[in-house]
Amino acid sequence: MCRNITELRGLEPPATDDEIAAAARQYIRKVTGIRQPNATVTPAYEAAVQQVAAVTAELLGGLPPRRQPPTKVPPMRLPHVRERMGLPPLQQ
Image (tube, rainbow, N blue to C red):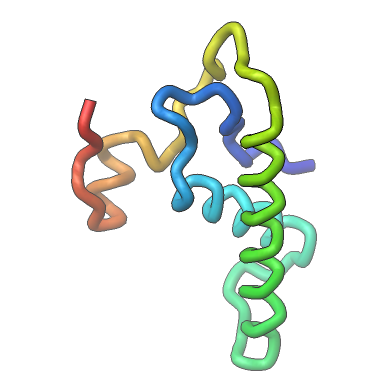
């Protein structure tokens, strides 16, 4: 169902709050079918994103380390995506 959500467990460095929030936002988009919430649904939509992000962070923190990192790099770690979003380059 959510094949576009990037695997965050086992990243080095660990997943950031922004990456977790982006995955939560993608999940909420998928299950609601709402890509751009209007003023009526924005409060519920954003509350759901925050709740899913919090649970995801808790889950990632409670899982054992992976033996190998994920096979795909999260989009927010790609230079061209960061540039498009107006984010600074990642420090390696």
